[in-house]
Image 1: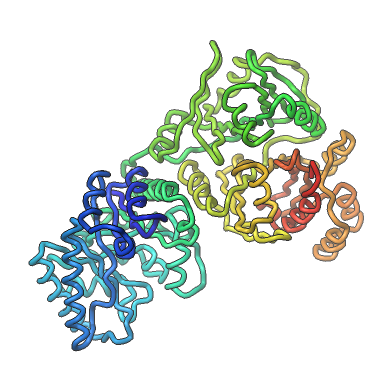
Image 2 (image 1 turned 60 degrees about the horizontal axis):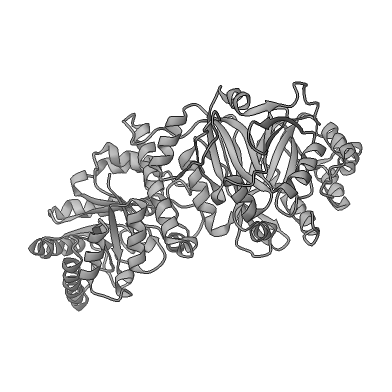
Length: 620
């Protein structure tokens, strides 16, 4: 299907919106009337700019309050329509969107509405134009696409058709199966928008909270599946109203839009067992390593911190200042090269996590999917005999490496000289539990879509976490066996810990890494003996959880002695403790899960408040 986007979905000037849509890969644009009204030029100029960019103007919209108007208002409405037809001719588009009437002066008679559209069809035919009718979720008399289709069917005019908008249908829970009753030849265009499930007025919900497919909670894939099943082959066109997007980068939002339509079309084709346009979402089998970049000055203190956490250096790169640290199934690569990507990353951000390496089933397919989604690859020079591990760009300009599952030991044997063959005793840490990334509030949905479109993951519900100085929005993506989990955190408040991290770090990135243990108390004791500085938790917290959960006082005292946090859901238990942060950039979390699948959100406010108390220290 052709991919189109309404100019209202993107921020900036009309010319900038057209350029962003073209650069993202769209073949068409809907011109929103307000964008044209504020454009310093004629509609013919817009037509020329679009043509030069390789864009088709798929539609002009919206025309409001048309059908069912009485007396002189009806006459005036048709006069206004003829003016819009003139604009369409200059724009070079043959399709106009008419949304269902919301005027209190409109009359409800179905016969009158059908007559209005029959007369409009004749006017449109005389100009070689088409008119599509859309049911607004808040329409006065027509707010269900089944009613809009009934009207179009009764009109039975070749120049009058139906326009569907997924938001208007799904917000009112109109059954998706009703699409089967629509003649695809009369379906002129379909607008697509996702949204979080919110209990509010449909108009306000639509105007402020729409988002891209894959970013919300509506069953968009099932909706598109139903369209494909009836034989619809026209454009899928995004129409997104979102306050965050209005403040965001036009090019970034447009690229997200293109990715979202690619995602939803392919997911719909897969459910219909039809050939897809790109490989399936990437099945991740685990995190093979996290790479930290550090200057020579910071590599020493960071290595010392890893040592207090029970890690030991087990390999040195054959030609580079790169060390492999290991414990359990956790690999941390510490890169202190003086040139190359990691060096550049450390210059900008200081010592920080610069890359993740993921084990995947099919590396070529993973790269092909990334290419289809316009996710850029990254390449740099490798030494003679060294392995070239393919990678793509990730959050904040970081890298995601793809390693064929089962070949990971070849990487370590080929590129690293062993420093020891002895087992690493460690402190009981066994694997990476999850990785937490912080990003700007306006980037949050973009990176959520990035992960959801690229990888075979599910999304947890979005949470609002109370920081002492504002709200932090948090959401996780997880693969099926939970071997790959990433939590995304963003805040619009300038002084939250997340926002201060972004300012200090100079951009989005890994804020902390959570490591799993089978015995949190043994791990905590070993960490204390090794001298790891941990995050102190107030006594009030322990008094509260003892009363709230009815915990054994001795257990509470053991947790308090090691600053361990606790949560419980039904019979599932969760223990977590935190290190102090390294140079205000990142920190480590140590967790034990007993049938618990969440992330300890109930403790987040306590943890954030504790970390905020140390925000003036060199290390907190």
